[in-house]
Amino acid sequence: MNIGEEIRRDIAKRQRRTVEITHPEVAAYTITYRVPTDRSEVAPILKRAEMNKKEAGLADASILALCCLEIKRLGELVTDDEGNPLTFRDKQLQDWVGATSSRDAARALYGSDGYVTTVANRLLEEAGYGKDDEVLVEDPTSPS
Image 1 (cartoon, rainbow, N blue to C red):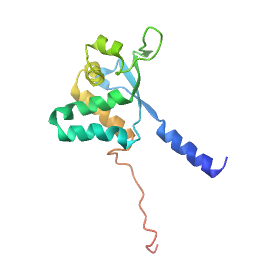
Image 2 (image 1 turned 180 degrees about the vertical axis):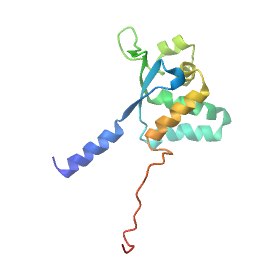
Image 3 (image 1 turned 45 degrees about the vertical axis):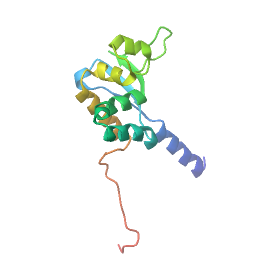
């Protein structure tokens, strides 16, 4: 494998990352999320939240709804009648939790906007937003 192929593989691996998140207060549910690595995906949601106070409370739920890939309850995958994983975007799950939208389904399942915010922040942190990683910065012009 040449260096170009290795670089492409490294990039693809980072762009296809998923994480499973379980909030301790909603321990029966483990939800697999796609890590949102493209700022253009989350930027419109965050911008609406900045401009409209009503949207601010819903932005975190919108991010979770956007990135949800599957939901497990007590370790068992939540599926439709054909065995397809249900997500917050699926009408069947929305009906089960008494929601009228994907973000309301996320809020209903977690049962607390505080839990929704905690999970959304953790997901965004996985994507590198606001994370305090130790980033190395060196000045190549300074004498060592």
